[in-house]
Length: 354
Length: 101
Image 1 (cartoon, rainbow over the protein chains, first blue to last red):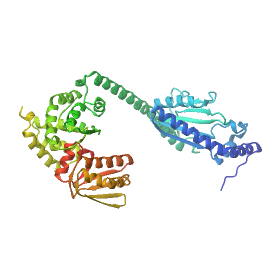
Image 2 (tube, one colour):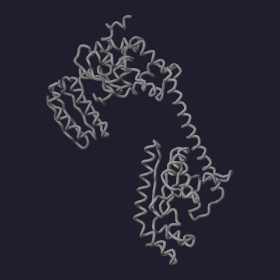
Image 3 (cartoon, chains in turn purple, yellow):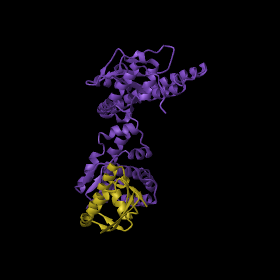
Image 4 (cartoon, each protein chain N blue to C red):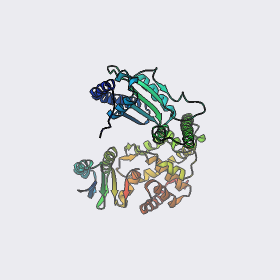
């Protein structure tokens, strides 16, 4: 049953204006949301969520009942349409704000950066609220921007704090403040980690580009950067040329585990393996497909045959080859059969007898 | 070369029977095109009775895998004989497919 409200004619008029403009608010809600989403996508900015709502009738009626005289008309109420952009990182809040400034007209007089009005000795609700408008729509709307952690805190605080209607003992309020302070620190730490990781990746890319591979430890990030240089391309092309084969591009990333498994520690180690074992890898490929009419190979043939040549030449034997196939394909008895076959095939190859 | 396709729930099984050489690949390319319709789910290529595979056969497998990857499905290659397994390995395609013994 709807709550009985005691509204004066002035507030009733505002409610009527609201109802007749409701479809327009919903339309603007979708347009603004879409604009935000498109802009973030084009800028490569990953946000956790974009939420939106048009204030419900009852909620507006309640607000008017409490402080209706404060508003001359519906246009004075800036949160009929509200959107919220939730970011993963604290520095992305400013990026979102900058995008919002470009997309919409901002009412700077009524816009609040709650991050800046904090007392220096308090923690709490940190978020940025912009009051915006778009041409052709006479009503303003609000966009809130905050991080996931700020969002979590705001929801918890909302649930337990000032809107619950129950007075909270001071010690609980103090605990909420402590928690807010901790979340603020965590947000900062996440940002620092992202900045440090970006710096690390830049440094690695620069080392890779300049050819200082011995200084670059082998890990998922560095291996990915190294693959951009197509280090196995020359060997793959040489193998393909044997049968005028087409090369299908596939991911080489599964070979990271194999390279680590055979004890390589840096990108320089991979470069050395390529330099010293390409001839062996080529001989293996020649033996296997040189006398067939197979005219399609994958771009992982180079790293695969390089690892086989390295393992066999360094005494890894059948167990070493099997381990390689287990890492790549999952454990299977058939891997044993292939390891056995490769061991036999390679015995007569020149690189094994050098 | 014969292909028998059966579907149960979201799993489609194609039994490949015979030698998948170049002429056979052309012969069954329509069947593989049909299989791409099911590529959003799981497609099992049952190779229990597949004796041989050529480059053209590999290409059929690869195009099906590509269709599955784009639709969020997967292709399982089941019960390949040692000769076919070697072909997958020699061409570097072994770890591209989920292979079931």
